[in-house]
Image 1 (tube, rainbow, N blue to C red):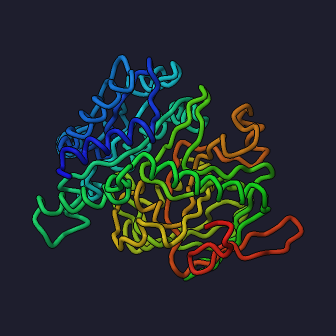
Image 2 (image 1 turned 180 degrees about the vertical axis):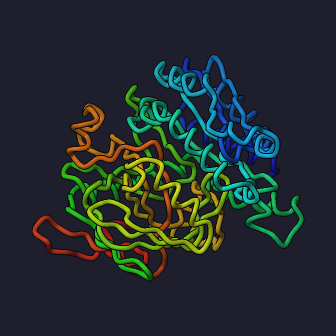
Length: 420
């Protein structure tokens, strides 16, 4: 199968499996507009997604792009006091799009080292402005207002980070091959392969929802953490349903089941197992200490200042909003590759997220106002940043309301055959 056919199949998966675009739905394709931008070399993927969306009955496909070179131009030449500025029209355009029930897909195709030479203060200022002004849109996403998804496109800058010992062209080809494998494009019937995989993830979510653990206990190198779960928490698998009734799969690929962390009931210490690409910079080898749900201390081998600025974004950025379980045997973990990209790396390892909680992960959450959601244990923040804590050395116990515990994961794998 040649490259053009694989790209076409991947775009079809994005439209049919990830987004599930319905006849009459408009589609907006976006590349990141804040820190990092997106490489224009991913444009062929956007064009194929547009063609697939039109075949699915979309009356209009639009694209908004944030170019990496233009992002760098700002850091090199813009007034130093202007980095708190953010687009005045873009956040509202996104809000109007999802409020109307139209689909939206984000292309993850950026160089993780794009801003490594830029001022951390300026990078942080842009990130905070973006988080602040995009918060209403992210609130819609946290409620699954419409069908949305994130997919990836291989680009030389990103590929060279993963495969530094080959030419940019060879690296890009190798990254595309990895994306095909992780996204099941290489299966005889990719859509059928995804249907089977999503069914397996749904069975895991059903099992955990039946358990209704009060907390999870994590033990591993540098990690000794107890993470409380709110009463009525819901474990969600790869496929969920939007508020306008459309089943969709937000991440392509996906290997996780996830739920909501109780914002006030996280205690102990946790160490990352993979680097975090945040705001165009890499934070590596980091540890966070929690007390009564709140981060009280951070440390990192690299870019600790950026990590500190992340947790200082607002009060909610110091608390957890999401918890996700991923077996170490996932295809992404077993590839042996570090992707330096959250879309892939979070599906290689169990993870948690600082910041905003998804309201649909709490029973009745979509109908709760902010105060009611907070009383139930839900966290609110302008940011939602996943970081990986899982590995082949991580153990997880499920803790019942009476304090009894049972093995849930051992050495990164499910401890019960009921979870696959």
